[in-house]
Length: 563
Image (cartoon, rainbow, N blue to C red; front, side, top):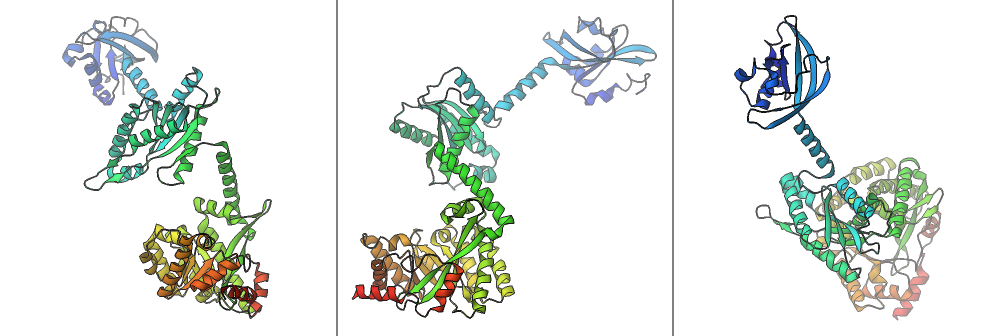
């Protein structure tokens, strides 16, 4: 913009929110943008040509000031209210005359904006509750002022609001915010609650105090539950928020507030792994176990991606209850850690499930299993179906069938050489997906089995609707038949149901002669357990497969018991 047309083209400054004034050497207002007129509350005809000092009396030094000076001036609006503006003064020329260009903004507005930014850093704008930073800051201040007793009666409780993410995803963020605000209001009316915050989108944090008795804590948790465990009805469909609770006691005068909140959230995560609505109190040993699990998960991921040779298969025989012959095998994955040695399946398989690694282990197991079957067949050994276990994640991922189909085709192994086992609990978790998978496997020619039957609390209709060839009775029933009439009756009922379906019944966990005699009496087809063999190496399996009646001696002893 040239020095001769700056006033004529002053309308270009109207796009700015700042107030812009052009003042000549005599102190008269030559031009002003729209924001400047609104700031003073004047029309252009009353401002242009008037002395700038009429509105800002302390402006005498503006025009002689240096180019780019930072200034702060006070004045009054047309209604008499005060103004405090800040900005910069620049020297410009208009028709060779020196003028002052002022770009100003309301200092009160800036201060207000800064206050809003500071508030937003410590609070959640949608719910008006303190956020994680604000909560930790407030707890830290109270610790420093020694407001908390250190006997464990003061504590931080993290509360998960269950399916709150469902509301945000289906009914909108406004619904989520309203539910959180209402829960916060109800919590705030509890006498024991002194701080409330929103730690993340679906987790509230509170500071509470009790008298130290277990009943007091249990009663307080129930009050907290009542505040947040509400039903919300979008249209006619009721949805219920069922909370979990994680508790961390305040016992250290030098505690880091972020640490006590972290412990409460850690306990909350542990509670969420249990039954719906569970409560968990932070314990150091629980945390150490979680850290150990993280180490196991790290090593497990590395083994899956880089050192698959650490995994190997053991095989447990399934024995014909009448002849003692091996009628099948179950492949069981094992992990030989390079430093820790053999890691038990009970230690790494649950972690693999939680970490989403289980499907990778399934594929590793199938590769080893198919290769081993091919090797046994090439050696001319007796062929029996070998079962492999899959989990709920394998059902959901829909990768198993194409992977297995390609693997069998490339190896030249018949699908009937395998048997796919899925636990009853995994079936009930998603019955439709399980049926779809079983249908595809049966169509391919792979027999299917229900593992751990009796533990999933499922209707028999669920199982009878599946294309199942084998039903395996859970070991907990087999091993308590001698002491529990209920277990004995359950085993008898499962055997009868299985035979009515035309399927094969297998008893798991058979360890004593009496247990074998009882399942024989009920008419069970096969038995599996330590009475016959622990899981065997491939070499030991080869020896067993070459024998005609591998376990005839055990069967004869049990037949004698029956007689």
